[in-house]
Length: 58
Image (cartoon, rainbow, N blue to C red; front, side):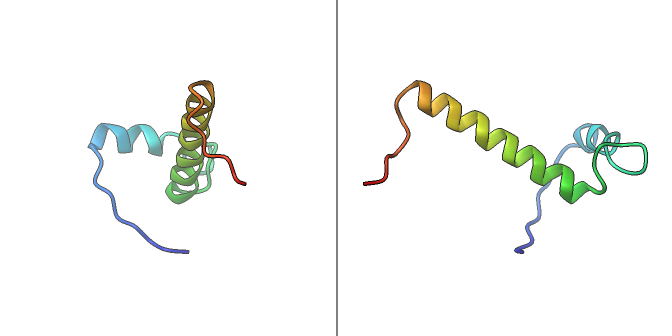
């Protein structure tokens, strides 16, 4: 799995960390970030579908 590096504001990182760990929803930051990316892409696909912007396979 490729690794990437991103810079994010401390406040956003603190919010993310509140959901990570033994008491959080995610095991680690990577899991949380992957889930967030998936969710965002799903939302973008839904928006594109509503505006008939999805590419169709032939």
